[in-house]
Image (tube, rainbow, N blue to C red; front, side, top):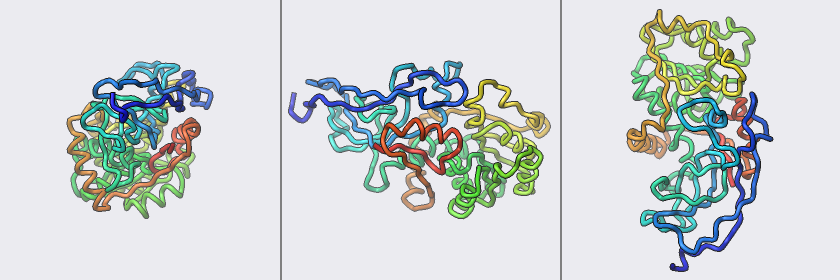
Length: 348
């Protein structure tokens, strides 16, 4: 083989799932390992070696850590934790990828990986920062786009409410809805998040759920922010946040059910109990849960439109970046407890 494909043996770090969480995720559920990249005399045809620069941390990972039946197989114990990454090609035997190219893929919590080129997406780290391909121009952005355009089918003049509005998905949902001409109300935890959501992202209002100890107070605050009721609901949280929103639904409201993060670390489904579920019937609401990776056919259109908006600076974003792979577990735990503002990343 040519010298450009010959790689010296080298070590790298990865994080594996050491034990399944019972309730709250803890650092001991993970294990940091030093691994050796196989001595590669010949890469297989179409294989690519990538050095990752960024790791995306996302709430769905908590579900994958469980053995419970879901839309995908559970994360295997003692194997590299699942996750999206963005990095740079080190070596390649794929015609479409050259050393130095920037790529994104599902390579996991690892500094380096070998992957078939068919599973990689080449990205342009010149026109936009590499990290945005894990946020607005990655799964979170496409999730927001799909929910707004394909499920909610948002129209000007409608009132849209989005929970976890300061997160990677919710922040894009609200901005896309504003561009359409909706009245947009976010729900988030803390004055800092709400100020960011209104002042920087341009939402019409934000309800700080942390201010209210009782369900009645939360519902009253949401009612004040949605005097004309809720036509469209993009739900990321579940629990009492979802319940308060159900109470404000208008007839024939549409709900895009993206996440139920309030119950991800619960030991019982009772944590997700709803008192206002009857509104789904009386308001003749349409509720659709969705997993965006099951709709890969829309990704090219979604990414093209999101890229155009990003280049035109019509979408704003914020990142929280933990330094070094070893910081990933604590950053992930913080994400699940709502400590992030914007997209949570790890930089290697």
